[in-house]
Image (cartoon, rainbow, N blue to C red; front, side, top):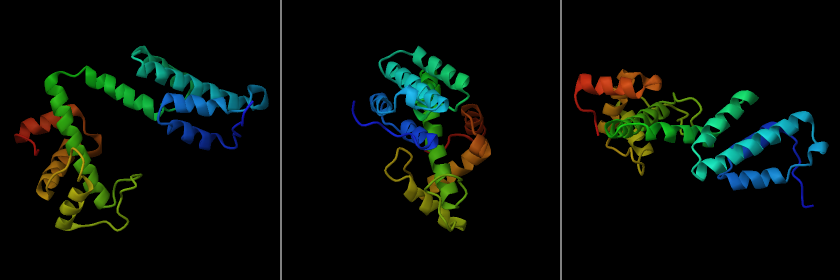
Length: 194
């Protein structure tokens, strides 16, 4: 019958399953769960939820766009936050609906946001981010340090560009920036920093 996975803590299982790199890995992990008759009702619900999510994820990857809808419904009915794969899938669906101009603007916005986040991390003010500096950097020393955090990404830039991106995102709403508020700010102040 094979080795079974002991479910000692639903939180640990949820974390493992939410971090599964693909649906097949998740389904394989679930197959090691004890038989439903050997689980508590809560554990049965957990396994059922994740079985549902990994099945919808597999279907999404196979091209079934409705899988995102059904997975979201599963989360709503279970009163659970959506797993990482589902957030990313919903984002991809939204991006597909953008015009070419909006896609370009959204790509630029993502770069500016990454630079803004890097500055906030250097200042030690971006809660929950492992890149947060323990001892925040202050003054003009922030910009080159933040530029180091985005090296090797599509948001890579010189310190002065990081400074301009940070100012742009701050004016457009900071943590609450939207594509619309970003576009308004760019239009108000001319072309944004690359």
